[in-house]
Length: 350
Image (cartoon, rainbow, N blue to C red; front, side, top):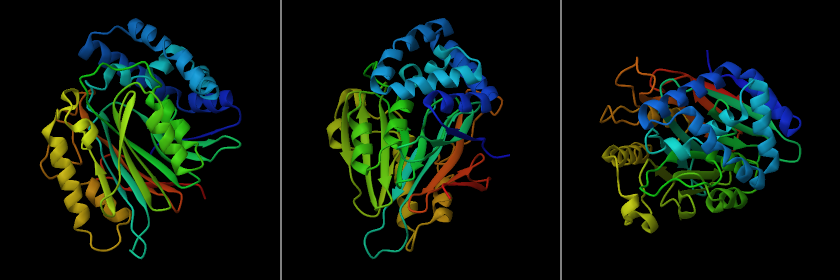
């Protein structure tokens, strides 16, 4: 079946309306999913979540008025309350430390004279019942964007026509979530950047709504790992041709902080396993090799490719899909479900 591809073009309002209309059913499924998650795990009524989301509206508008208009367009196209769409985009401020956001990501950045092309890859791990779409965003005057994201949100995992790509992992912190810019909004603005430094600047310096790790790379064989608390960040660079991250802090700035201490040991094991598998690739690492790493079941159930303990539980965590981006070629490959048992569907700027 594959993922729904939505072409979003024209004015900000028109782009949002196209998204909302095409993905209406999926967006309402996601609203229902987060309504259920908040009630069951946090005891938060949806009316409270809406009031919480309302506080983000002026922040989003001040950050980027066009993206605020696009969110309004999504709501209109989906026939949803705009507050519900803001909840979807700002959900990290409510759910991050309570939802299974256990992704594994890596960049492949061959040095001069080494075989292969730059790749950026990730397993997206989240709630079983959560629904995703692929957006093809065409905003005049900015790079074209391809992004796999939760239906109803602006962007998550993606690349642009300038060869810049971004993947994201949840991090855990005991520090309360902030009223910064929702990460889906910040990532979308970063993907509209024409240079790697501008994309990194948006990701690193924008106050955000929760702690995350971002891996930003370009077709120029450069990659940077940004570990971010809502208003602080640290940057890491590759020691060799690979840069790998999971769901714990590894940079010196945050590693020793009490609020950033390791929460889940399987994150360390997944990091070690991904680094080991990549190091075993002696030649060029292409889409096939990257998919093999993301399909690994070592140390299951806490493996790189994660399967739900209870498939009947829609709030259980699992690997939703793998995303592999060829930054130079402008192609994004997305598995329909677990990469261990699904083929890859290509999406391209061509």
